Length: 397
Ligand SMILES: *Cc1c(COP(=O)(O)O)cnc(C)c1O
Image (cartoon, rainbow, N blue to C red; front, side, top):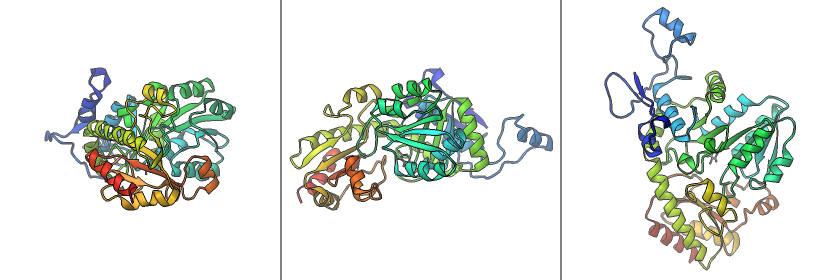
């Protein structure tokens, strides 16, 4: 088994790393990444088995913690995020859970953005709370609120940027500085931007977590997750995953590796489509407001231009006429899929107030800006004119 571990030190462009970094090839010299669908590995002798188990010899023993296909995915994503090491997990939630259970103990405190993926908030409020870890939520863009929420027992700051669905940004570099000044770590869920648009580790974050289910796969096929960062921190998360077992399957890693090969070209085109759609929607007479970091009207346009390479592939907009008008758009589209998934080459549309945010009370929703007329579109790779015509059909009903 050999490994072409191309990394940043070779001066390769990220587009090249997405295709070439971390390939694991067998003695057969297969050109595409081999799928090592095996739970365990055999040893040439009792002595080598002993050395492998003691960690004195590098090699594969058991796929809960070491598998060549999963390893290839880990090395490639580490290279793309500019991290020293990556550990892959069964899903994005498994990555977040593993990170939290590794780094925190009873009595510790988290300061988190209030605009997080719903299951992340549930994880913090149920699982972590049960084990004595408390979370304070703040508006992602309000630096003073982050500062005011920090306590002596704060161990970790956690955020997503831009937020879902209102595309509110958090300033990663400023929050990394704040965390470090208080002896805390900054963990960034980089699912929305992917390393194509933003590399949080380079802005000072300590760990990046991913739902590989979204744009890393890009075709809505498999679940996966990952944690990327320094050798020291990721080693701790690795020891947790090795013991607790929320491991990425070799098959899913193999699918995700092919997703990574087209990540750049997909993200670039999807961002272009989203930009065009956002500009078109902003001028549409039936639209009240568009939320998209690539528009000059975005309240944090300056930060977005500095922090992200493009506006992203997800946008939201408020249709005049509340829920009734918004549902007409959802029911009127024929190309765009009616599903909550995002980051797919197939565009999707959702009505957050009645789906992803339905369990939040109506007042809390309004306060957070998730109004009844709000729709979220994850923009895919279809021709942008077809997407506009599809939305126009929905809007003109
Ligand atoms: C989907 C998502 C997750 C969870 O990922 P799964 O792979 O579904 O477990 C976490 N964070 C964000 C921002 C997501 O969109």
